[in-house]
Structure formats: structure tokens, C-alpha cells
Length: 438
Image (cartoon, rainbow, N blue to C red; front, side, top):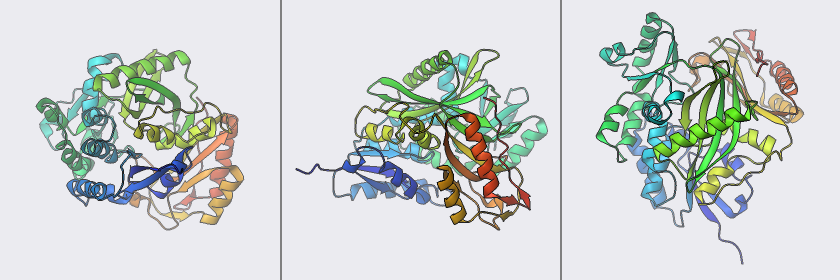
């Protein structure tokens, strides 16, 4: 007798993720349904969030079949929409309030301060539209400011002086409500204490700068039991704020990884978060033997999915699929083709016109030659300022996923590929410039 296939709805599923979800073992018994398009969900700048949510509800209500699970793979707003919709439609996942506590960077810091103060930097919530609120920031320079809700480092700035702060606030002013307005629309749809709602009105966070070796801990909670399936190291361009690559597996000592596990479990239990995946970013200050928590994300990191496949043998998409179906996730360990893998970024640190860009055919040839996956984000003649959702310091031109048997092999491959891509901005060739230290 033929097994009845289960229906899983995926918020904002795009073609790339549809392909990857269907590569996961057991996916032949599943049907993945797109719940709204990626572009529509992320058009919250022009489409009211109430309207986006209602479109999702109507699609689910109109489905003629069983809704067996729901998952989301992207950051805001999907990570907040998903738990609300799951609760309304009786689908198992984390409680919406626990997700809001984790995802709102100010609320998250408040919770962290209560249970892991030793890992929590000094911080202040403020509203860039309120001069009095800004005056109350009591931090020594340099410090960092960022929206309480955002993604991809958008509207984040390092502040080294009064002049920097004034310049950043000026840049933020006309964009400060871009994330805040849709966030508050979603927040109104969950039960939250008056004190917490008042706290969430601080839409930006100023934080003491933390430093050390940056990494991301990936894991999940199933029926109250924690499991951690990987630690990924983050590298920045030398003397820059922008990321150059994410590399798996981590080189951080096991004793430090164990500390991360303990801190992660402590804060997530405090928030009441369970039956869902997470990734938590840490800094390990080796010199001072300090561990700092940067932020909590209530999902798997798409940046790491391919890395797990290359090293361990299966895309980490398997984790949210299993959790959506109420199953304990199981992943293989070190069953992949490579000893290490990385997501690497080729960036421009100058604005201007792209004066040379490879063709699709050239990119496909490079992918085949190096067993790479390449996402090229620019075209010849494009102005880099037109790219959306960039950090405040650079422009992503190309993203590559590469596997290797050693770090030297990995970075040598990337240097060769960057040279073959032969991208130019304002007539200047863009090179890899990857830092080679741990």
C-alpha cells in the first residue's frame, strides 16, 4: 500500500531551498508547499505586515488536505510569522513569546543579563528618534549600535566618537521604522506583558564591543532535550568589519565548546524555547578566557546547510523537517566528502559601477571544475549602491561554497576562483584577501 505523503508548508520557500529540501533523506514521503513567496514576505517595506499575515492564513485555510508541519528558513519576518501561524493552526513548534524574546536583540539582552551576566556585554536600548533616549547611552567609545530587529548587519554601525554617533543616527533616521513597524504588527498578535511590550519600544541597541574568536553554535531542542550538532568559525576580512567566510568544523577547543553548550542551554531554558532549532553566535576571548554571547537566532543558519552536507553528509535542512513532523532529528557525523568546508564572500569595499562581471556559462564552468556552489549577485553595469540588505561597510559580489581536505587547499581554491571570476568595480579587479589565521 502506498504511503500517504505528509504536507509541510515552508514560509517564503524559494527555488534553491525547494531543491535542497527535496535532497534530504526521506523527502520522497513529503510534499513541500510554498507558503507565500520569498519576495512577498520580504516586501514589508511596501506591503503592510497585517496583509502579509492574512494572505498566509487564507492560503492555509484554503488548503484541501492535512497540514502536517511548517518550517521557515529565513530571518525576519518569517521567524516571527511562523510561530504565530503554527499556534493558530495547531502545529507544534516553539511558543511565539519565547521566539520574540530571543529574536528581539534588546529583549534578548535583558533575559541574558538575568541568567548569564558573565556572557552579556553592557548594553542600552534607545530610540534614534528620541534625542533624550540617545543621551542616556552610557558606554565608552568605541561601541556598536544596531536595530533590535534586522538581518544581514543592516543598519549596524561601529561608533568611535560623538561625530560617528551623530552620523549614524542621521543615516538611520529615515530607515529606523523599516523593521520596527512590521515587528510591532506581529508583536500585537501574541500575549506579552506590559513591561515587556514597553521594553520592546526601544528599537535600537547600543552595546559594548566584544571581541575574540567568533563562532556559531548550531543545535535544537526536542521535548526538552538539547542537542548541539556543530560549531562554525566566522572570519572577517583583515582589519575590516565584514565577514570573509564561515568555516566548519570549528578549531575552538572542546572545553570551550562545552561552556558554550552550557550557556546556550541556560538562556534558552530561561526563555522557554523548545521543539525548534537555533543558532547562537559567541565570541571566545582566548587571552582573557572570556565567553561572550552575541545573538540568538531561532532557526538553522542557511549559511551553514551546505557545510554540514560537505563534511557530515546531509544538509542541515533535515533538522527543521524532523522537528516540524514531531520527530527527534538525527544527523550523520563526518560522512561527507571533505574534512572541512566554508561559505566564502567576495566583497567590494568601494561603491560604484560593476565594470566587469563573469557570464553564467563561466560561473557554471568554475563550479564544475572546483565542485563549488556559486551565487553571483551582480551584473555588469550595476551600481553597487542598488544592492539590498548589505552591511554598512561593503557589498557582496559573489558567495561561494567550497569543500577541501585542509584550510590551505580551501583558501588556495578561493584565490584561484576569485581570479577566474575576474570581477571589476570602477575598473579595479576584486581579489579574495582572505585572512589565513584561525
